[in-house]
Amino acid sequence: MEGRQLSLPLGVIRKFPQRKWGEGLYLLMVRLGSSSAHVSSNHDRPTDNHVMRFLQRHEIPYQYLPTTSANKREQEILEPIEGTDFVVLARYMQVMSDNFLQSYGKDIINIHICNRPSSHFVTPELDAGPIIEQMVERVSHRDTLHSFVVKSENLEKQCLAEAIKSYCELRVLPYEVMKTVLC
Image (cartoon, rainbow, N blue to C red; front, side, top):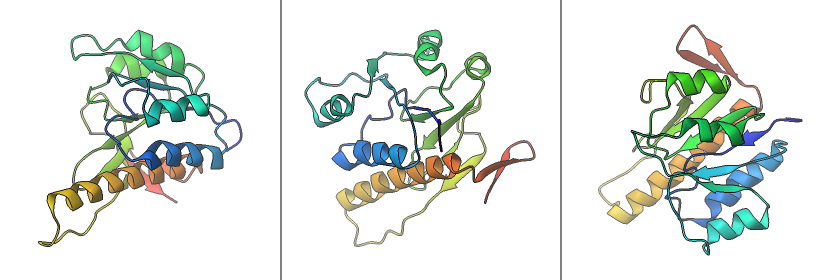
């Protein structure tokens, strides 16, 4: 989408050890015509790892902003995302206040991590927003803990990427109060 700006704040790169996560999301943004990105994280990370090198290589700004449930630092979060069309949260693990959502005033997409991940719009209630995308993966007694974790992580990435893609292609339509329709 021409002119669409994407901000990726608040832990979007946390706990995704595979190199392909950040690179895949970046390539999706480029393919969809995103003109900018910004990554903030409420999780400290080493300065010399593949994620940081990836962000530096693509000149994507990075900001470490530690938060707690008592101090979400929402005003500081609002500043770098001003002017973006929407925000993506992943593994932020904090509920956004109604004041923050009203101040930002645009759509925020979150990934609900679990065995059956879903991407949804953010509301002041925990994981209660209208679902954009939901996926499942078949598991069996032959799966090991490692294979189960790998399947879950891959499913999370696919679910979030598909939700962002659908949203950017304007295929997500609000329906009634808390529902969406995908075209």
